[in-house]
Image 1 (tube, one colour):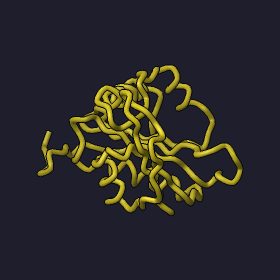
Image 2 (cartoon, one colour):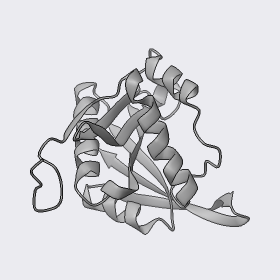
Image 3 (cartoon, helix red, strand yellow):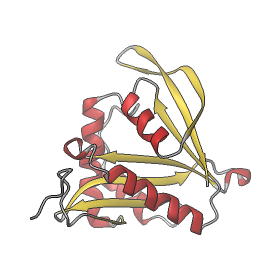
Image 4 (cartoon, rainbow, N blue to C red):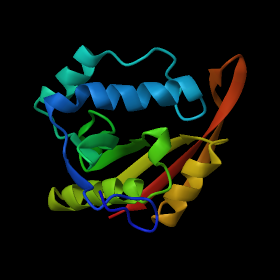
Length: 171
């Protein structure tokens, strides 16, 4: 397969997540649980629970990025709150296989989320990021997210209090 200058393959594409993608979605997220610093989760995702999320009739949107027929990342825009006033707000997340970070896949996944959210008249996207995760903060800044606050010592990982940065993008 021909490689582009940034080591991306020419066969990459973003698409709606399907039930067959659940093992890959879990594999990628679980790798970030193991690495630490990107999530407060400590237990690996259960494929059955993620399968149910994908198959549920909701206003959540899930996408995967494929490169050479392999899922290398996923993104989701999920309901921020069940309260009526938040119906046009989504909390977004994007996770990449650690070996595929920095190749532009995250940007494509987030662009796809924004496109579907615009189509459905979503107005506000929010992302909550562990404040020490500088790579994720920089990524969100580069794609137009604005830091609106930091929740001090809101979570604990490995017996250490962690701050969470709240970022938003109005679309």
